[in-house]
Image 1 (spheres, rainbow, N blue to C red):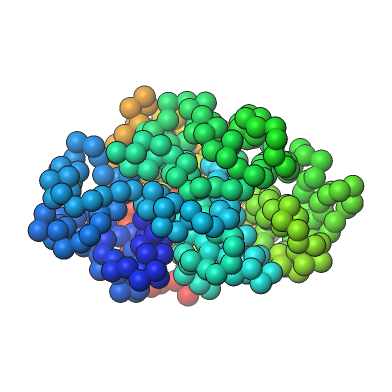
Image 2 (cartoon, rainbow, N blue to C red):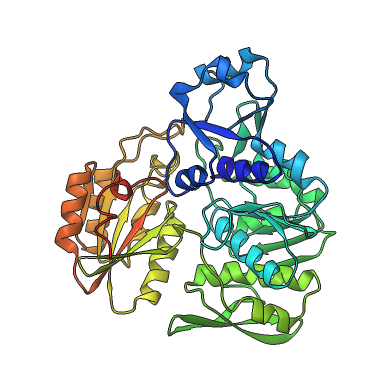
Length: 449
């Protein structure tokens, strides 16, 4: 997603752009092609082709000892990472608002972009996803640039977190848990990356429900800091969902402030809370902010309604970490009260397809009515862990909660399970960051109505 949004920014700034990858997954792959950005398959890329360009931007999927790395090094063409490119060409002279965290950074980046736009700020922004009402990235004319700030490393030749290259002035940290097992051996090593940026920022907002967020914030005590969360004094509190809207309260400057929003799910309210606090820190008043959060939209593949399949509602979501899976199921329960939640999950990131989450995934499905675990048949590259045992995960979920659970690695079998479960009393919540064994590329999509 990051490489795609970087390409969009570079095109807006007047650069000639092309890209290459092994596959261009929807929705970003489709969006790039719609924007007439030429997309090559990596097998088509030759040294001669690369020499037609002035700069090669290298994604972190290119390994140090890979044929692709050797080829680009032999061309003699300058190359860099996309975080470095953005930092030097786009962000250096802006007030950069970094939105970081294990969960919620994409959604929160988009929320804050919408809010600042409503407030007349014309922010620059980069969101790691496809948006319904605007491009996923834009340079903007205002002073703020809101950027999704990933802790994953930048490139094989820049083994530091992307966020360290963004010249972040104000940092929002939505959460911090162990992830990216192919890069980081421990949670402490992730905290260390954040510790590198803390001395340089001017304002910090963090979710204190996560102890690692508090640990990171303690790296400096000289900047304005606000904590929010279920266990914080600020809140949110008294969160109520009714008729497709959510009301909630925050306690700020010893006052109880009421808000209403179109978003549903406690994790979304937490994300909105961080945006509200950012606005307070930057001088916006309560009435302005209250109006700005009323009507917000989500990124595609974040609780995205895709249609009905045999009378069942179908929801597409990017969740692939145990915490985000649990929070998403809870949000869908609130949005569709009384419906059975049938979940399909394809754990396919480096960490989720490893045994790092073998046990913690189980409890995430405690509120599901049925679970289908899709096995993408990809080995993990997290060296300290074995491959996730998909069959055992399904068995453990069934044994723990006595709900129908299956594991499959075939699209045809996945479709059969879905067909057998579909009914007017249910919602299919389909989670993962790829194609779900090809489900989103099959005629399943055309059968939605």
